[in-house]
Image (cartoon, rainbow over all chains, first blue to last red; front, top):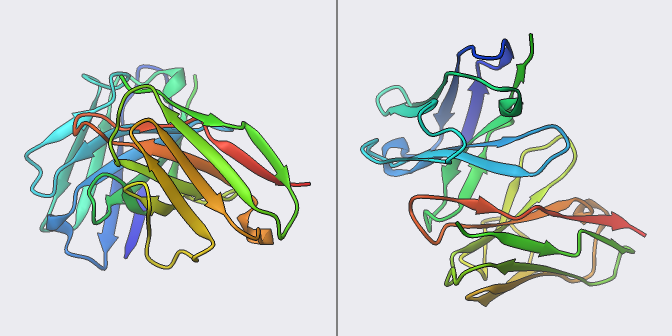
Length: 118
Length: 108
């Protein structure tokens, strides 16, 4: 199992950014995926989840209406579109794969850093 | 919204000792509780899922217990690589996921 995030970098407050996660090594369409972030020196913060088929998405209240999670099961990728970025969105964003129980995340990427600054 | 409270915030122990980490939920989460280890500069690693099931490849010295609102992660005979930050996580509802604030396990 391999997950590789990309798309991080510097963005101005109010700006937009698109993160991608390329996966391999498992039957992608059967597994829910998630984005979890971690601000520097802080704990883990769930951002969004998407079901294996892509029909069901959930979001943390802090990002609802600003972030959109999606997936392309033919391309083995999951995406996080972020708009209206704020200072407190600055973090390392991890892509994670649901485990067997689907209530926890068994595999994680190495993360991509998003910096929000003018 | 469910709140997970981990204790202690920091635990100072020596290699070979036993570590007991606690996670308390503000509401009943059944057995839907997971534990992760995060070493500096690394991604989190799943240790325990559904309260007591070890994830693939996790050594037997890691064990989880509890249900409802009170959960424990026990690490018997600490090894140098075990000194890290540990997080609990619940997903009682399909619409949200919550992490605890973490317990730092440091070398005494």
